[in-house]
Image (cartoon, rainbow over all chains, first blue to last red):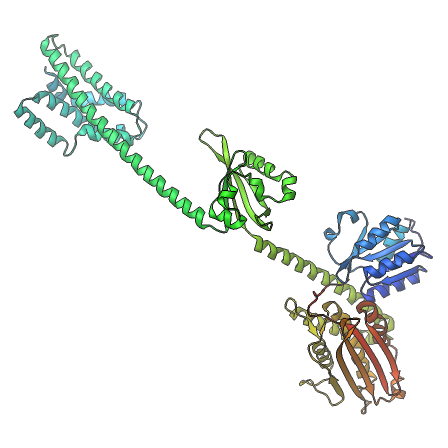
Amino acid sequence: MDERNLAGCRVLVVEDDYSIAAALAEELADQAAIVIGPAPSVERALKLVEEAAQLDLAVLDVNLRGEEVYPVADVLAKRGIPFVLVTGYDRHTIPARYLQQCILEKPVEAAAVLAALRRLAC
Amino acid sequence: MKLSRFIQENVRELLSEWNAISSSYAPAGSGASLGLGRHAEQILRAIAVDMETESSPTGQQARERARGDIAESGSAAAFYGAVRHGDDLSVSQLAADYRALRATVLKAWLKTGEPRDAERSQQLLRFNETLDQAFGESLAAYDAQARRQRAKSQAALRESEARYRGIVTTALDYAIFTTDAAGIIESWPPGAEAVFGWTPEEAIGQHAEITFTEEDRAAGVPAEEMRVAQAEGVAPDVRWHACRDGNRVFIDGATRPLIDPFGNTSGFLKVGRDSTERKHWDERQQVLLRELQHRTRNLMAVVLTIFDKTRRTSPDIHALAKSYTSRLGALARVQGLLSQLQEGDRIAFDALVRAELSAMGALDDAGNSERVELSGPSGVYLRSGTVQTFALALHELATNALKYGALAQEQEQGRLSLRWRAMRRDGHPSLHIEWTESCVDMTRAAAAPQGSGYGRELIEYALPYQLDARTSYELGADGVRCTIEVPVSDATSPDVMTHG
């Protein structure tokens, strides 16, 4: 399968755990992707989306300090920006409208997130 | 031969013939085949005696004497009537018994070639008279028995009705009620009133729909339930229901059709238990289970990233093993503290600090140390979601202090002061912490190998990122100085356990 290179892609990272966010940002930087964020909260993520003139992809952790990330997902969906959902819960807790999205369950390796992003970038 | 004598002499033959006839319509195992023959024999003999004695006073006495011998109380005929009632035979079947007896006897007697004279007519008349008399006695006994039984079953019915009413009226946590075939409420016992709130006056005459929620009514659930009950014999009714006061009650029950004697559905019986409390409890369990699963998964993710971080900064596998084990230990201690919490409890900052420093050997068993000064209020509670990252940061600070800083073996003069106070930032409660190491020989500390960077990263980046903390970290002239100001739990605000 021909997977697109992430180099130059602008990738929004939304994840409230610093070490996970930092590790993912580092992996993306290694792929020459441009990391937007990371953002630890819905409020911060919405602000980044609003400010970003161009966004290509996003990685969204579902639960942010007890808040759900769906307001961010809705804005991205409206703008046609593909995203990966990462959750610490079971798949069946994801609302039906997102079940067609790429969903990864924690713990997930950075390599799996990168692979999912490459597929979306195609 | 006189008819009475003929009967006396041929009793057995007559009876066996009669039995053959009467058993053809009596149910199997009934009196006809179970010794009724003895009563029938007595009836027959009594009739013969009756015919003999006619109506003279002496005859009357003899008759009574004879009959007394035959049946002590009442007559054999009366007994026979009662027994036939017990056999579930109808009155007309009892009459048929006697018709058969009459025909059997007369047919056999006439066969003996009795001359057709006045004597024969006289005897026929007399026979019919006494037979009718016996039939009358049987009938009266049959009737009396029927009356007794009716009275008995009515009493039993009244008793069982009273018992059922008692059950229905005392089962206050069971909503039991009935409707007609269209779903209109017909009975509304106290249990239904206790669960749903409507009085019988308010409920009876209303459609059972009133007990359903608006969404279920709109979705046609009440009609569907009656349809299923009718088709399947029972329809489960396990859902939230509406109460009079607008509250909702979770009912675990079923709806069953009431079938009349003709097999038609005459209404419905609804029986349900109020399981609202249990439902809430179940839901709470579900939430807890989900959170537990979520925390476990998240923890695994943190364990993985810490490993990755440690691997990148370890010069060799021994150093990796040592640092990683130490960090996992700190993570495990936090999980231990968190798991001991009761619902709604928080972890106090001072408890976290003491647990961490004690575990690392920086405090003795009594929680003291000559080189460590702890000062600040107890009972400043951390938000549960922040505890883990906070503990890791403290762990890194303590690790560095023990390895190269104020608590290191070769830094005999080194001192650590940890002061904290509760304050408010932008109107929100927060905790201000100062970690100050002093009298550290920085020329020796500067020789520290790589690996101390993680603590600094946690404090400078992770705490601000994850906990909205304001932090500073600097290497002073005689040791590390670090300040952390972090929002803490407000006793009145709901605690948020989750993150990730």
